[in-house]
Amino acid sequence: MEAYVGEYASGKSENAINRALELVGGEEPVTLVDLDLVEPFYTLRPLKKELEKQGLEVIAWETKEAFGLGEAGSVIKPEMRWVLKRPGHVILDVGYGVGGSQVFNLLEGFDQSELKVFAVLNVARPMTATLEDILHYLQGFPKLDGVINNSHLGAETDLDIIRRGADIVSDAAKALRVPVIATSAEERFKSQLGEKDHRGNPVRYIKRFMERAFW
Image (cartoon, rainbow, N blue to C red; front, top):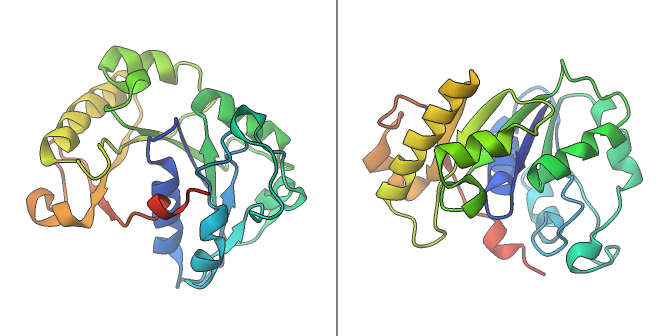
């Protein structure tokens, strides 16, 4: 079981989706869960049918079922409460960082030893722009098993921002004594980055889905 946690525009949903799709095709089923209960605009809801056609089971509110806008947010769907009891791989997409991670307490059977929590970090965002910012931000996490450098500027992302993110996130991981799980980047950077970034971290190449998720 893995949880991808991050602030708005960190790329946590893209990482969660791509990780779940990576696991499809194995011997065990894969369940992707939308646990971003605060921000209803960019969620997995509009992508649910598309992702299910690719072999995932997606637990998320249907757009027609959702309610509330902005900070009104949403509530936990009954199936979500029991999701940790499901067989196979379970991937959680958790929004709003430290605050969002409190949703773990609503899940039946939550066991910190069995759930891996990864913080997705984007140094282009103000809350995680510097080493000091990241260390302060991650202090509030009740559990942290690794960090992911997902530094980007949307369509304007270039190699410099990815590499700057790798430097800052690697230094933060060293200070926190947790591993860098990966640098994630779009496939268009594959010829420039290779299998590892310049700090020696593995690179995960991802496809973008969330640009189609606004509703």
